[in-house]
Image 1 (cartoon, rainbow, N blue to C red):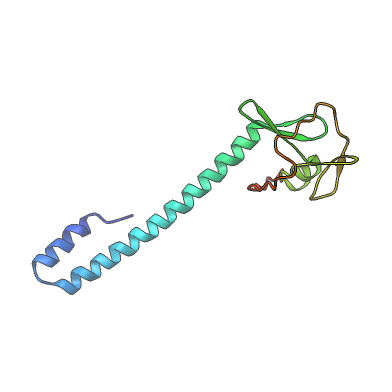
Image 2: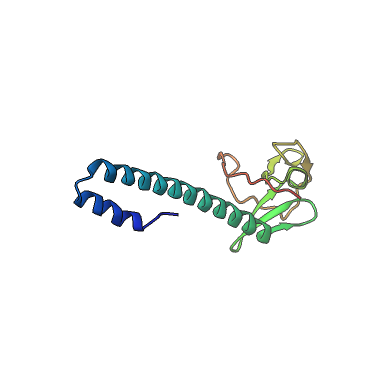
Amino acid sequence: MLDYYRYKNVLELFKKGRLEDAKSVLMELQAKHIALADENSILKAQVQEYEDILYIAKNLIFDGSCYWLMTGNIKQGPFCEKCYSGAGILIRLIDGRSGMRCPMCGETQKSADDVVIAHNQSAAVSGKILPFVR
């Protein structure tokens, strides 16, 4: 934690003409401030990651053969049941000749008439993979 009283000491050192001592104290304060700012950034990133995990946990639905992620009223997916159950990662199934196929593990799901893919299959889709441990 920053020692706020030390800023007053810096001012007093400047007034007394002890410039090198004042610079030294300011450099120490600056180093502490940078360390706290770095720690704050790391903690914010961790909080965001936990919020993402919580969001997925609340909005992930298993329909008996694959997982779907609800974002508002939109059903996104389908995602591979084997990859999520085994490694805790959401891998979007792609439409193949013999059904829906996982590009990661190769598992094939039979296509259902009501399966709707929320993105254009020809477009490359990238996203953040969040590992989940069961």
